Length: 243
Image (cartoon, rainbow, N blue to C red):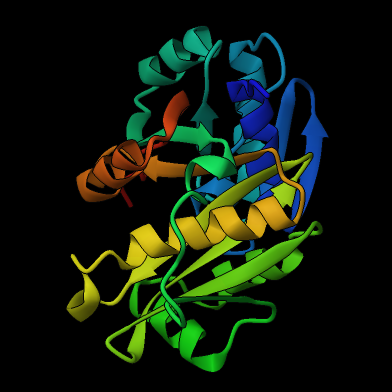
């Protein structure tokens, strides 16, 4: 099945959900609960005026959040308006997708990848070492569809963790974290294959992942595995005002 960027934008919200969503004017606003940009950014659902931007800023301030917007395909006019207001670009992101069968053609060595729900304490510790703390763990627990925490083991020791969930038949992998001493040993490769086996068993027709463009190693991995680029987005953040 061919998937579009629009479909995957919806999968992001379904598999990595904000604590609450609000529609105000042309906006979909997210209450992030400290879970990061993906669950805190405002997105436009139609044409936007300068007054609409003022409205979104006011609501985000009321929620105690930074003024942050996600810019996707079709948001070029809004992107220019935010740039004119001094908003800077943050974290350009690429969205990848493939059929799970592309990664299930190679068996995973025994006891190399486990999938389970809920995460084990050691998995939470690995995430914490990578900066994925309690607020992002709460995001995982909020995901309503089928989901799993993945753990990779190499040399008889924990190597890495990831989270995968399904929305509308599309599995998306988030929060991939590999311990520094276990990097360059294919831990992330095996976890992506483990995610594909899990997704296939759940009946998902597509496996997807999102990655910041600055993470060159991860982008190289996803490309080498055969993932195709489906879309991009970036954020615009309002500069902090001087005290």
